[in-house]
Length: 122
Image (cartoon, rainbow, N blue to C red; front, side, top):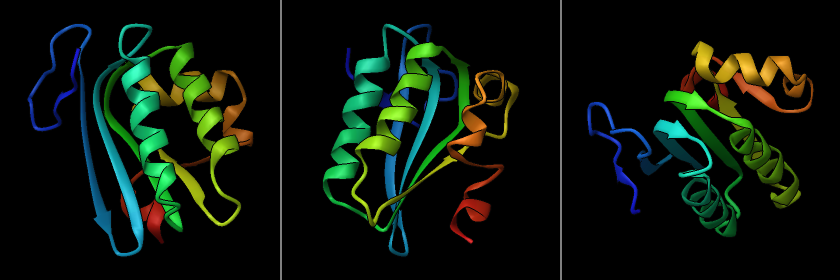
């Protein structure tokens, strides 16, 4: 299943909205919908594609995510580990659906987690 445009108001069950854009030197991957077993491959593919360009900063903006499973958490760790040494991976998790699993697994101690894209870029 192909990703739906991020501006889709409410992606249907099992769909993922993805938009990639530049902000200065940073690349921002904005995601909406559900990150679960059905959409994790798309999520990982987009992260991998963004990391191939080796931007100085990659922001994974998850503020539009309504459900975030363990496969999403794994993808975040893989992004951190797979990034070039000079690429900073920063996560925007300003909602309970994403922040709670990150905090419950103590990944907030290893990942750079922010409340907004502006904060992640400052």
